[in-house]
Length: 308
Image (tube, one colour):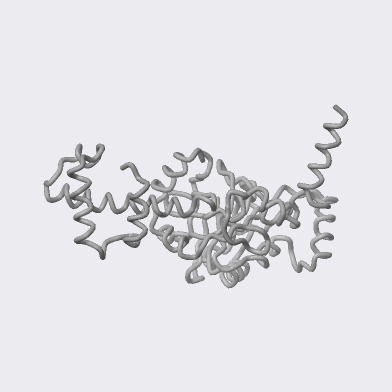
């Protein structure tokens, strides 16, 4: 028993970096937590989902992506009930996470001291912003605090957009709604806007696993934020979600056209397709190459492994 305890302690020490657990020194932990990802990574260890996947993801609906994740056993990746700066402007990118907790004086002093030793400047809530990369979405667990929980105003909003070219998702508040709305290309999904300043909150981690409402978020997850809500897609499933969603779009395009023309009944289109409908679909694809949401090569590769 004693030997087992010693081994457990050694393993714990290897996985947890020195000083505060998961506080900034997180590359090894990120690789460990996201080992399903086999592609490129940022210097901080986050999976770097390719830009073209992010661009294609913008066309994917929340419902399509949610259904695909559920089929793979991911049931806790969606959070709704947001106040959205621009309702019809999606936010898509790689999650850059921050973990906030209610303030505690002596711990806040230690965290500030450590941040300053690492060369971090200004207030704590600016530190995650300084580390943003292009294409990131700043995702912060602000423990749902809105009044005195405003993580940014329009000054930090401008800095965020300058660094990432993207928006934010906060389980917390924001201030300066009017100023933020004037930043072209920027969008915010928050729990509320309030004129108060950030008080009694402290930053406990950057690029660590966090909770956003009912969802668990890992750094590098693909954020898909639309009017319906926000979905956090594990990096290793991002390409699968895009390709399967694009195929669903293609099936729907064909199905809608066939229904409008009266070629097939709703029951035939919504049910399991017969060989006749499959052949008609492939013929329709040949005649409408400009309507494909994916390349023909990608479609052919997908159909080779699909059982319809």
